Image (cartoon, rainbow, N blue to C red; front, top):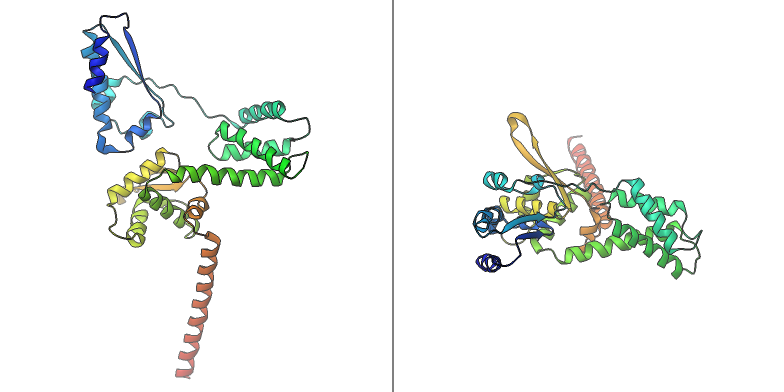
Length: 301
């Protein structure tokens, strides 16, 4: 920070009078609270008083995928000093997505190669996911490549299904490769409870108990697990809410924003095989219980 201020003050006698500092993906500042992100922003904002004496004006522009007050844990002094003005860019709606995709399709393919059925399927998929236009256009490209590989002059629904599966695998695999082991462990816990145990909305305490029961070695603290869940929320893998139970207190609830099968399969876990094994074990348990009851019945007959 000191080097930064020194560099700014070097320009005080030049014609440079206005400086704009831009933080892209600024929500990542809050992924690790140990660095004191709130204090960092406070010092940065309050430095304006120091720079004003040198006739230098400083502004801060942050770009984030999440609204500031939803995720950013700013203390009161930062909130009062920042004077935040938010500009929200709303996600594309399905009509916007359809128009964009129709235009891209017309530019990229000959007439009749991609019909409205395929376009509607891609738009629906994109709207249900994260409304990322770049991924939507990429999905259209992969559909065309798969049709070409089949030697077909028309994109079919099978191409869309294979393309969406490939896109999900490639996208999330590269994302998971960059996650720390603990984050993947917590993500696996959520995926297991969602897909195998059939619990769509999960309490933080349930995630902690799962990790405590299944993780090798020492289990991270409840607070650390809670922090990891918030980090996964920032990168749009998990959603959460704080629920009040009246006199019963409050509880944090989380759920996956991606298909639960994806992190399980990334970890080499076949959900269908696991569920089949569980079903077989339950059938065996029923058979054993029936046999025990019959033995007892014979004994007392």
